[in-house]
Length: 417
Ligand SMILES: Cc1cc2nc3c(=O)[nH]c(=O)nc-3n(C[C@H](O)[C@H](O)[C@H](O)COP(=O)(O)OP(=O)(O)OC[C@H]3O[C@@H](n4cnc5c(N)ncnc54)[C@H](O)[C@@H]3O)c2cc1C
Image (cartoon, rainbow, N blue to C red):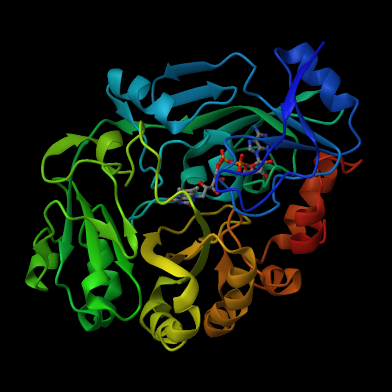
């Protein structure tokens, strides 16, 4: 008999899952039985999203009881089951391989990150699903589909919001391992950050700017460098000084949970902000993130700064990053390099819901798209208007799931699925 556990809440506790229990199949037979018996089903992975994207009031299911496999073959790695980046990265590193990028924390699952378009930073780095080369997905009849780049569903399913079925395995492109040195700088004036954002964000492999939109003492530029950096001295030319031990991310004091700075180390020990063995970020928080074309960065940042006093009471910190263009239909970076404007908020659903429309209105002139896994209030038709292939995504998802078993309120609200 398939085990269950309480479905609980997401990581930050701002969303309680509606179904009381989560099914924990132990093998493919139990998974197939659970899927074929369901009228509505969503998968819970590591639950680091901040909205109802992964929820349903019917059947929730986790792969945490299923076997995990990591198989490296040339420049590809295939991961099966609930595999996190923290599990995957050291296995790749031991074989001299790496991923092109990582998000700010390694605690999240490969399948969950791909499903929501999770990204790190770097003007030349696509988001994490841009490295997906194939997926294995179990449909509502228990059949498994191998969806590679030649498959008609691929540009939809690789960043698929869980709408295509249960992703049982993901294949990713890897690159030769590389070394990264991180350093965090204070003392860079906001006017210099916004004067030429493209140059600052392209100066190193990964650049993050932290700000609270007004107090320069909170501004920080965290750079992850490699030998191939375009302009290694640019941040110091702008007056940046290494911050030393007193690292803070806006109003978040770090507690020995951040990755090492000042010395070179393997990619996976430096690219995330947070160490695999520690609690990331603040924990007691909600996150939102909006993507605008990088070419509009200066104007978009001025628009948010103009509403800074409205958002200040609920803001812990903003992080600015860049993501390279890709060809995935629902990607916020679909066919455009983007600036990602992230907000870590106090863990106050009502307070956050009150300020989000202000941020969204400020960014509306810039063809803004939201992060699928974070809190937003933009209406579905506004989001769909920014995504040229939204209707193609819906058609592909209906083709893959004609009975609508993997649809939920979030997909209905945002995509009309
Ligand atoms: C502290 C913190 C830092 C973060 N940093 C970043 C960051 O740097 N960059 C960024 O872009 N985001 C970031 N996020 C957001 C988050 O990492 C992503 O949104 C990601 O989706 C979370 O992955 P998960 O495994 O926890 O997914 P979950 O929340 O468990 O699931 C996400 C969605 O994917 C679906 N899903 C998951 N697995 C499967 C599967 N096997 N089959 C079918 N559907 C599936 C779920 O149903 C759900 O709809 C951060 C979040 C936190 C809490």
